[in-house]
Amino acid sequence: MGKRKSRAKPPPKKRMDKLDTVFSCPFCNHGTSVECRIDMKNLIGEALCGICQESFSTTVTALTEPIDIYSEWIDECERVNNLEDDGA
Image (cartoon, rainbow, N blue to C red; front, side, top):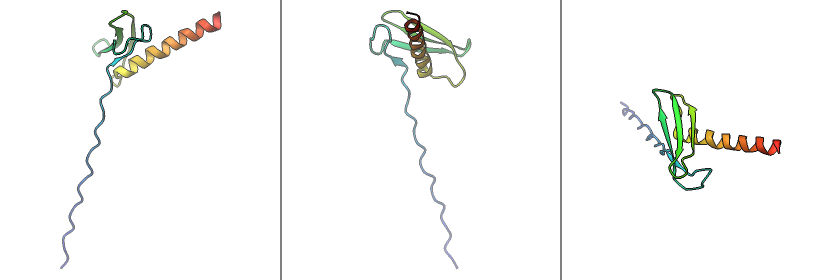
C-alpha cells in the first residue's frame, strides 16, 4: 500500500501596489497639488491643480486610472510645446 499524495498549496497571490492619485503640476511645479478625479457616470476624467487652478479633462473608460489622466495631460502639454517650437 502506498502513501496518499498530498496536494501542494497554491502560491500566495502577489499584492498590487496602489497607484498615486495626486501628482506634481506641470505649470507651477508644486508637488502633490494635482488631484485626478474620475466621473464614471459622465465618462469624464479631470486633473486639477489646487495651487494654480490649471485643469485638464479627458474621456475615460472603465479601465482608466488617475495616472492615465495625468499622463495624457503631460503628453498634451508636450504636444502643444512641440507645435509652438515648430511654428516659431
